[in-house]
Each structure stands twice: as structure tokens, then as C-alpha cells.
Image (cartoon, rainbow, N blue to C red; front, side):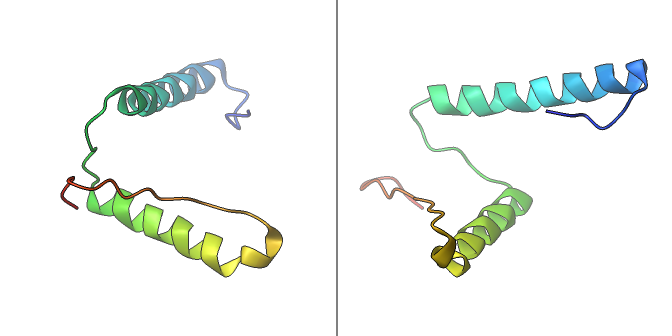
Length: 72
């Protein structure tokens, strides 16, 4: 993966941001309760779902699982 910079200070900063983001992803995967999304995250997810649906001919798939008893 490229952080698109050759400046060592910028590379270090971007790597730290990426590591922090991935830590939140891993943490969310480890917990068993639903994760609340911000409006921006929900909009991004909706965009991904739409693009996946619209590009169905390309063979890409995306799944969303509904679990009974968990409020949406």
C-alpha cells in the first residue's frame, strides 16, 4: 500500500493514521454488539451498497446480515 508521499515525516504521520483506523476496524470486529455509524459512515456504506448493486454484472458482491432482535 502506498501512502503517496516521499517525505519521511508525512509517511510517518499517514502510517499512524492508517494504523489508528485499522485498530478501530479490528476492535469493531472483535466486539459482538452492533456498532453505531456516523451519518458520514452510513452514507458511505449506502454508496458502497448501491455501487455493488449497480455493478452486479462485474461479479462483485457485498453482503449485509440482519440479525433478529437487534434494533436497526
